[in-house]
Image (cartoon, rainbow, N blue to C red; front, side, top):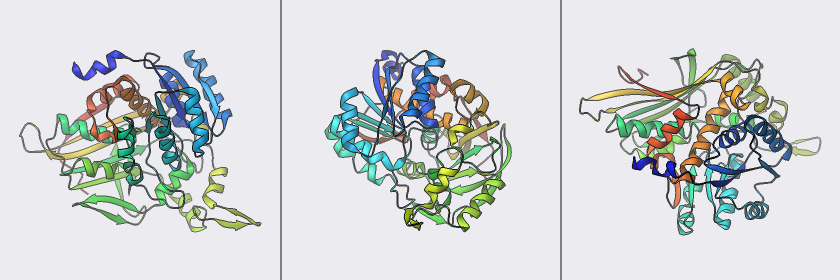
Length: 414
């Protein structure tokens, strides 16, 4: 019962959400559905019209009013002024990863807690590391503030899944495979289900997995396996790097191997290969008609906006962990598969967004709830693995992302 004392307190709290894409939309809708925790919700983005559209949807669906603002979050002085004007208890960063450090700096200057869903990456290199954010731990600690990193699904829920297994099923985790399957069909020849720029940078970066105390690098999209996903069916999945591998390797030190897999259809791979071959995925500037442009930025501008895919996307996502290790009950080595299956059409009916946004926006809301209610508390910069998984897992079940766990006959045979 002591675990849920913070949740029972339900301290009313004001939050500032930065970012008005699909994830921001889901998070704000879900916050509005929990007025016992989120007493005031403020939403800011570079494009205020996007904030206003979300606010209109939230009002129609929940009756809750959302205040909206125009903000360039990389202008720290502008961010500081807005935070001081609103006076939030927490800033929820659902903007682009490039902006993480600027928003964290704004929180440090104004004495406000911080949460995000993806780690910082520099604009000029597709490099996904926590080192820049971990370096701010002492500054947050000195100010008595908390920063929670990666409270999405992957990263986020996938890390909490692993820690729940370690608390309730496995004494140690020897191997871990994270499987991310989007079985949805949006009807487009080529589109990404979240920010095209971030998606393509992530997919085209070299793959890395953790093995025997170090990261092993392989060429992007060069390792492929087929897996039969419940509620979706057989899909090709590709070995990739994802930032939770770094934090999981840190907080599960006995882990011998950790891998991240994501599914892609043949059409997606075909289009992406052509775009790479003609240079459209480049992130270095080129000169076009006397102007400097970045090809990937131009490509993002002509691709469908991910938020527009909600009405047409059908099918399900299936995301989970397969972990093998020494059983807690002393019965030898065991393997468990813990996962969530989310329906695109159900997600859209509830929030006006497809399941890829839903599966990230809901955990962002839950992470914020953990912090605001005191269920998770600390001074400094923290990853999801550092807290008790139980209250977070309970809220997943209660707020649209129910999970299941089953024992398998053994680890993946590849």
